[in-house]
Length: 393
Image 1 (tube, rainbow, N blue to C red):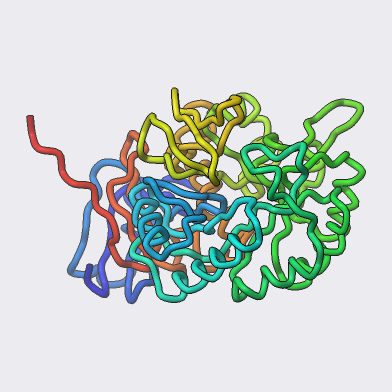
Image 2 (image 1 turned 90 degrees about the horizontal axis):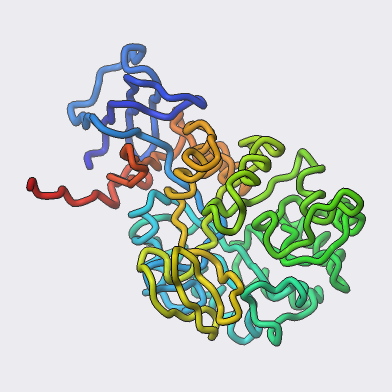
């Protein structure tokens, strides 16, 4: 694309659908987004009219492990490049490369690889940081993580992982009831890391203590944590009770029932509920047998499971998460888009740069058709994906 251009059509901006909208881009930034007739400047010569679908802010996936046959834990630049390109096909313009429980000897080079790849740049979605999920979790709530690799969050190990990632660790999932966890939580908070309660057997009281120590987020709410009970609210209750804190939701209709998805949306509101994929390498590939951290995963009927039936991440893509919130849970489209774009961007500290179609923001944009499929993706104003046109029958 040229340095200066414009997109015209229905846009999602200012929390609403604007039917005749205009987005003007120059030097990788948005200089105008709003009603076309209200634009006072001269429209760029390069104008792309979107007749079908909607122009939306790029999606931000703050919890994804892999896609299209590749995984963050592969630990290679080639895998991250492939993940970046694949994510762009599904509307993701920024992501956190997410790890999983493994021995430190395996995790450390993975962190170094992500740091190098992020600094070098990627061909599609931008890697804006790391989500460290494990190894500091509760074995009883391990999900698809390997129990033998789980360890306690001792401060020396936490510090080493942080240093190896060169400041790129944005989120750490931790079980706050584990020994030494509160000290680690406080240390991470002081460095601006978002500490997320997840894979945890904490009681409501323990979760509240963790919030006092610095927990600010909850990993894939309802999954791998103590559930809501009227006499023991658990971690789910803590996620709902603490209104100022944010939480993730895997909105595939499998990890969480669509009715419960809607309840969580109503309790947390779009500004505190981030849609995530939690996708593993089978995403975008279909049914078959795959690997997750050395474990065999079978994908059938849109579910990824270990041999014992444990859900092993998902094969969800973030554009489908948006679709599911709209079609399964009755959420307005603009709010579903917000939960997959500006909300995670704001949680991660990028709320003034990413996740909105607004002047001054990065020109991270997508075109979603009426079936929620991605037709085009732009990252910093550059078109990184365009769906091939289907031949006429």
